[in-house]
Length: 74
Image (cartoon, rainbow, N blue to C red; front, side, top):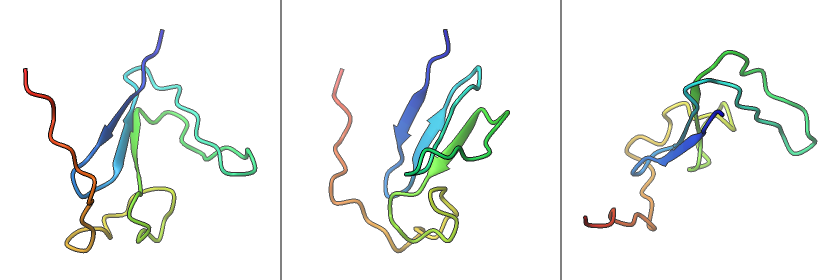
């Protein structure tokens, strides 16, 4: 069974990873993006990327996430 991990990067993108691949990403009309064979990709959450929905690094030094929550303490 493949498991997908989504990591929220501080002041950055959402990183989507699946060690076995098999991730499907579709647009608002249900058309798939061509990500065949990729084990991971980053999704823009700042709105500045020229390659939406993917992150292109445009957020650097321009986006501050007001909802960053520190990780739980052990």
